[in-house]
Length: 233
Image 1: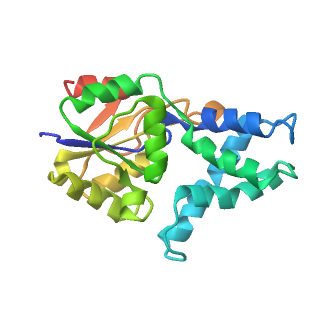
Image 2: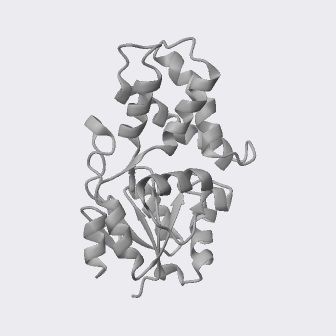
């Protein structure tokens, strides 16, 4: 089977969201919560990620981007941690923490290797500006930006996988979804895409992460460099 395009989950697969959000929360909220458990704060905010997207997936509201959803959920997270008096400009800057995440160490070089033989694009719940900011911060080079901002919906809705196939013009099996999350890969498989699971055992910090897929996949890799090896890049 020839794989022509790789499309990537980003949060957790290419970038370490927990460490980045925790770092920025500790910095921006130090004046308001001197003993903040920044990792727990990041986890609590992330826990609102899927419920907020479900308001769009269900059709209860029109598409809004991830920054909007994160901004809407942030006050509840602050209240959960007993943090009061955070001005709107600081809250807005904290939402931008999601634009300042660091890639896992092997990712930039592995993407360069993969791009020698494949077209690459994020297929993320993040919108175009968010993907552009993460790419520029980490030196990630893509051939297009797909995902929520392109499809105007959120995974695992079919549009994100079908649009990824159509965007590059390859057959479904020649388009590979790369993710650290088995549910994302299961959805991709249901639409005929090939799949690659990337182990991210530290995605959730002490709570761990997926070390192996829980669904059938085309490739299972220790990290993105291992996937590049398996694909002969």
